[in-house]
Amino acid sequence: MDTDRRRGGHGRAVRLSVLLGCGVVVLAGCGAMPVTGDVKAVDASQPGDSQVQVYAVPPREGASPLEVVDGFLESMTSDDPDFRTTRTYLTAKAADAWQPGEGTTVLAKAPNRNGPTIRDRAHRADETTYTLTGEQVAAVDAQSSYRPLAPSEYSQMLHLVQEKGADGKQEWRIDIVPDGLVLGQSDFKRLYRSVNKYYFAAGRTDDASALVADPVYVRNRIDPVTRMDTATQTVRTLLEGPSNWLRPVVDSRFPAGTALRKGVTSLAPDDQNVLKVPLNKKADKAGQGACRMMAAQVLFTLRDLTSARVGQVELQGERGPLCSLGADEAEDFASDKGSEGPDSQYFVDGEGHVQRIPGSSRGSGDPQPVIGPLGSGTVAMSAVGVARDEQQAAAVSANQQDLYVSSLTEESEPAAPVVTSRAKKAADRLSVPSWDGRGDLWVADRDPADPRLLRLVGGSGEPQEVSVPGLYGGRIEALRMSADGVRIALRVSKDGHTTLHIGRVERHGSGEAEQVSVEDLRQAAPQLADVTAVSWSGRSRLVVVGKEEGGVQQVRYVQADGSTSSSGVLPGVNQVTAVAAADDEQLPLMADTESDGIVKLSPGDNWQTVLKEGSSLVYPG
Image (cartoon, rainbow, N blue to C red):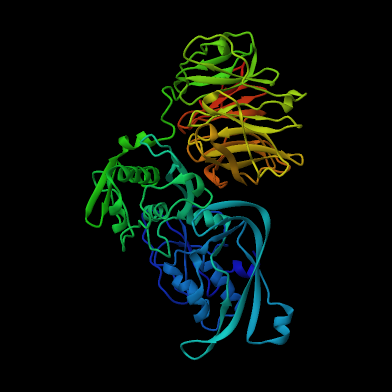
């Protein structure tokens, strides 16, 4: 950001750091000042607390082209209703045509502006051009879906002309402007927040259907375009349907065309914690079963958003109440409800046997060998994956060549391996296995001569090869399935680096004829040049271990869409080789380390050693 934009002169938006409990009034007009509060001229995208707000002011009379450009850029970072003041920097025609809701370009820092060009200065006195530049790191589309990008050069033109104002005087205004907003990263984080909206996994229509999180970004406080509060924006985007990326694998129970009733801009639970959602007449088509599923979508979407926990959702059609659903009833739809011992953990001990730590979230469980050959057999194991219902487990042999599946509830004789790798080196053989919420088992064979992603329906039968068309020569090193079974996290090695990708699991057909593929891979942590380990942590969050280019190892949370979680970077721990998190985000995070054994990180605590001996600790899944 250059010196002119730091000065905070005329035509610039005013930034205020608002103290809690203090009212702030901004008087319109050139040179207007708030009557209370601390006024600070700050640079766009300056890191600061969430109380910093920007109040848009119109351009001053006789403003120079540079002031107009700077004022427009600052005004875009404000909560200006319908961007009315922001549009005063544009010509009348451009103001009518500009669509700020068409998406958001996220830059590492606020955009620089360069200009005017030498040609402009030499040829025309009544028009000029400035170029906005910066390093683009992400984009948010018109559906509010976030997509991280490998840092790339951003360049867009702002063209200015002189236009006659209401007083008849010529004023500089912008007549060519790209649709959408252009924001620096810290302004974006100040203005928007990540929320999850929920849909049902496609093809699962019974009451036990798994709800799938679809992360989007909505405006903090009031959206300038719709004038809706955050909760209402979230419900609105839920009703509009899933994001394009997730749409092929999920369904919404809301009838087509269902929307909030006209004029609804605020949603909040009443004093009984009941949230009433007024819908248009399209919602009246839903039967009671579908309506309850619709209510479950709303409950899961809003339960972590509103300050008062929503205890019940009541959907209202044009003719009155349609149905209601309590928070306890909605748990029947959760994708992570299957395990009867959700806080159990499993690991491979120093002898190669699989052991279980029951009730370990309370720190009181002692390791016990699991029932069956995985806990007491003669074949030593190196890694384990446990089905989410904890009825069976899969383990990879110590030489990583064979995959075995065994019951965890009854004794049985050792069975033949269900998958065998032919690779010559152990590092090129089988990955750690993972189970999805449908009870299917997944594993990668890393054999350079025949790399494959394999799925075993119900953990048995003939392994089915799953196509992954987006690898482009990369090799799957490790995988973790989401609880809903429609997303897969892959560590992919290519050109000397191992990066994290999220894929969409598409299923076509049924039974033995069902065809499964992983489509539309997208990089989930482009800021990390090398990813060592990954695990799902809740419905739409992952914990990732990796390094930035030239950096040191770090453990951090990222959202499934690739955006950085508000939890940020976790406390450091040395030489992590594997990581495990539970569907319940309140359970401790676990990690395998080279120096300290297996360690855990409980919420609000520091890393603590759990076991000095052992490896491959996992939660079910």
